[in-house]
Length: 120
Image (cartoon, rainbow, N blue to C red):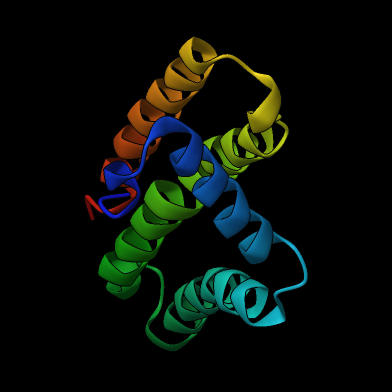
């Protein structure tokens, strides 16, 4: 977002749309990395419980759960719907005041949820 913040409203929304389109569509490396991180975290919790038992795995369980809730739930529940909404904006067909409003909403929500994702 810091790099995007230097752009005007139209460029900002277009850059966001293009970036999001690339990451969500036909990018197997991105999907493997994203889904892989979820699977790896769940696998780490399961292996820890199987190896050390439930009581001795509490720190790994707490850390893994915190990651899954802070990062993955935030992405799935907030970022993906927001990204899908932004993708549908027809930038060349809306007024400059609406561009300003859409950018403001996007930046505010993204900054808030990015702070949640990075708070762990």
